[in-house]
Image 1 (tube, one colour):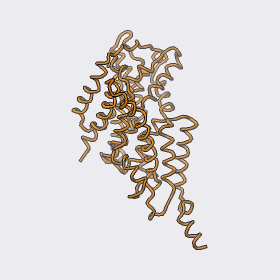
Image 2 (image 1 turned 120 degrees about the horizontal axis):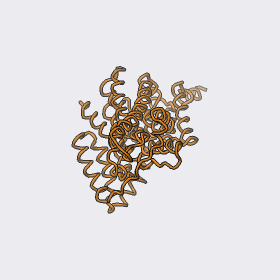
Image 3 (image 1 turned 45 degrees about the vertical axis):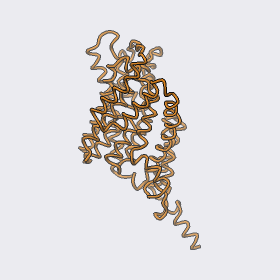
Length: 377
């Protein structure tokens, strides 16, 4: 009986607390949303299962969790804590990205920049709530709606908040179809939602090859802190557009990004141990993250309306496209298409929305580089 009692007291059942139970329930909820609602399943399913794995309680002498040096999860989490996985994700994203629509209508880049207002508004909000400058910078990047960028910056500025920031960023990315449409409809009239845009021009191959090289040099010189993300993003795009490295581009956008996504999602989920995650600070991060996402969406839509005051004829922009300025690629662009087609099924906005969407990826990476440069000690 003593042996049985000793075994029970060292088991997960014996060590279970309300905190662990709540986190396991959250993990089950993430998996359910991924499978039943199809909300970002490639991210939510690994994260959700990782949350369950990370919240099975164990005795301290057993090295099992991500914070136990020498454990398997500790080494998997190394790619997150040291900012290794996010640049690899950006390499794959670059190999997937087509900049043609952005190059054919460069003024749409401004919408991607305008949506980054959510980052700096959240930074100010976090400072007002008593966060340190480093913590505020790491939390603010949630407003860019870019999970890898949020992980990268928080690993550099506020590693102790990494789990909460990553979960908040990916949660709001998954909820793009829920959060953005009400804001878009609130800030636009039906006439504006029905607005048609002229078709994008055909972009020559030479222009598509020059762009990743030129933009990398410009962004790298402006914000050296963005080099790991922007460098890998533009390198991946050059692999795709050069036409001579199709095997490498194919590997980057398929096998490699899939492997890294699995490892990143699972290890981020496993880092949300109740003792580290269920804190008042985490609640503040989720509140600020939600507000920043709303502000970023509104910023893009409103800036498109301001731009239309100076544009004429078919050069005007459908304000819905501004909502795609957040970095949730390609979900924000799909939401723009969905909301637009509810008003007019024959109005196709997806290609136009992809321009500020990919510009938002670049913008959030530059913002992260600026914050890292300014706040690094």
